[in-house]
Length: 119
Image (cartoon, rainbow, N blue to C red; front, side, top):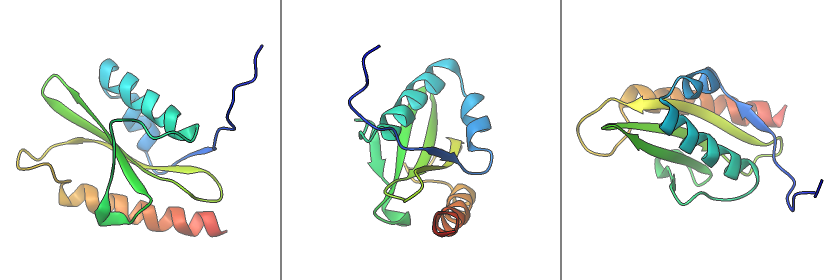
């Protein structure tokens, strides 16, 4: 078996992010799961974008499926690996922004991920 040309980063799932992602519809789950795998292997998926609100190393993956938008927020460039901060379905119908309750959850998990990475 050929060795892959990369050394994958460890994935660290914060809160219920893995369970939530696993419950997404099949197409969204497939696309976002593939994106997370690319991030784990040091790549930036073409459907990733930086979340400036949270700092330079926080990104999100976005999948549109049957009129709904699904997102995964993650933190890169940490010592222990890639932290998957949150997975959620965008509920707000106004604009492209992240709803306030999702922002608060991501921020809390981001703080915990930074603490955990320094332990």
